[in-house]
Length: 430
View 1 (cartoon, one colour):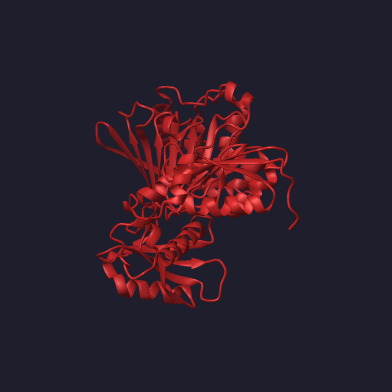
View 2 (cartoon, rainbow, N blue to C red; view 1 turned 60 degrees about the horizontal axis):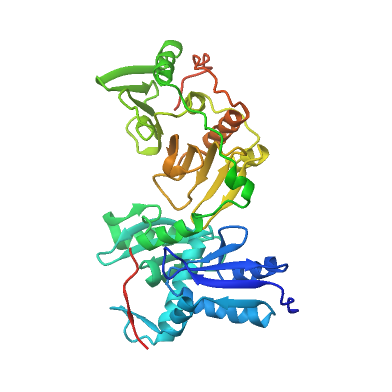
């Protein structure tokens, strides 16, 4: 590989808030080439000139030194902050490491293997089907998209996660997992550990890419006015006879579809933007298992609620196979991280987020720039039909295109019935 000219500078420093993660700041005419090399070493972009290295094995200083050495060989100028250099020069050991027979190099190899598994899950190469707790740690079963023996059982968490067994078929791997762990088996991946959540947050902390974006305030997201949800609920029962209404408590109305497969709950006392007003669930039969569920907060625009209920009535025909297709066509901007992908409307009033490793909140649609301060939120679980997500994406795109929120109106007459763990402390050693 030809060496790059020495007119790009890369500075490495410890992350100010999340030790031992490392931030790389790139400047100079060939900074893009340097960033490409860093990406190959596990860094992820958090801004136009910054990248972060956050690993599940907490070996960021070690791998920073390796990356810096390679960049120097390619002709780049590198600088390592003194505090980070001290971390690089200091040897560390895991306290109470469960494999005490391993040398320091072997411990690092175990951590590197766990990092590869973490990356494969986060980037969609490895899908987790089930998880369980075996009495000591978390175990999972999953499938790689490619490979000969690509169906695996995994054992452990964070820097200790390993492949314990591999199988030729998914059916064989899942059946054996059920046999081994029985009633402890749960669907989907296990909840993220504290360390995994920290890593995902580091990759999510993306500063604005330009000064103009920083100085320009975001437009106000569309929000339902007080009383609009109540009016829409009344219109639902007035215009559509497929729903049966009852009110078991003064504060709650329950709507059950005549098919007995869809149930909607409305909380009349929800007021705050974070209060859940609507809960929608669909089942695989009158007494069957729940297929998916969704919650909608008090400020959710009525057109989005209407879109969900109309979908449950008669799924509309669409040429799009995935909500990403709709959002791309509407010029929404994607931002991908290891844990999720977020599509944002051009004026930053609405965002649609996919978290493929979550079970309860697999999809989130919200108003505003920041989910923590969202004006309203729709959360959908795993199992929600992609055609419904397409319908929601299209309605959200239409809301952005029409800054003035449409007034609530009755549902059109339907054609048919509605269907609705913190990292282990390390001891210093030399």
